Image (cartoon, rainbow, N blue to C red; front, side, top):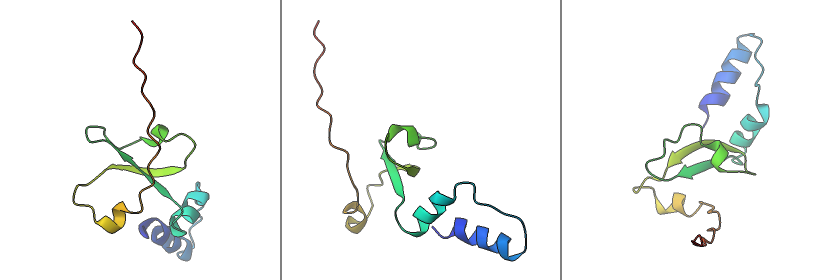
Length: 88
């Protein structure tokens, strides 16, 4: 979590002209307001932000079965969509 902020601060302190292009994402990261998307196993998690319309998702990963119950309790699940069979 601190790696992006630490890198930015180190470059800034060195006097280099750095500007966080997505500064709002850095603020959300440091404020713990960021969202991470959980995708099903079998879906490569890179570039999956489009699967979460209406949310700012900064990263995606597959759910780890060994994840702690504390972490699992913080997950916000989208409501399930009701599937209707196609008439044929």
